Image (cartoon, rainbow, N blue to C red; front, side):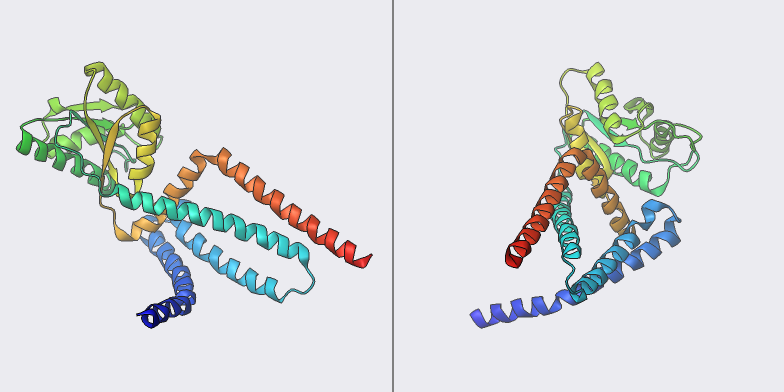
Length: 295
């Protein structure tokens, strides 16, 4: 048994280079797919940038290994690796949290269902937003069938500069076409981001009743961050996620991760500052040691 476990561990270690280069190739190829399907926007290029970044890091590591008597480069490289290790750990934590949030199953006793907006194409509901509305529609009818209770759907989203109508109005029309009675739909058409989606929707619900149960629908990759904003808005609301095209997930997850990092940017800047301090201490120790030897 011990021999088998040792053999598996050795095999995994030997496969690490293949996993690393496979990740690089996969990210670059996904970036190409995103460009073809979604256009040449910066957000769609994130997987490709990440893949190229890992490749450059590998090349820089080889170059650094071949560099002779360059302690400054070692300190810089140490700092870069420390920062990457920190954000890699944070990214893994984010992925685990995102995965766990996929398996949230709210009870069929909801008074409100909030649908978070995600942008329009002119005045048309695109597939990404349609999946959120379809998820809300499905829950609406399931609860009505199982409990005989109809939830009120709050469609939340203002009008962007390139949109011909508010997201809320376009979503309202979409739901009506899908068979949702208009008297069970409330529009919140002032919000411009997820935090405002939560804050303004909460105000709508608070104005109707003092105590209520609510959920929100969004895409699965957005569940974790949306839940953080719900708490920040003082809203006790669980989320249910709609499926997202597989090719879209890497880019979406990178964007979500960056957004969550920016939510706590002051904390991360303090930690990076601590890493800089450690690197400078290492540099100071190195030269003090060399100076002591010369004496």
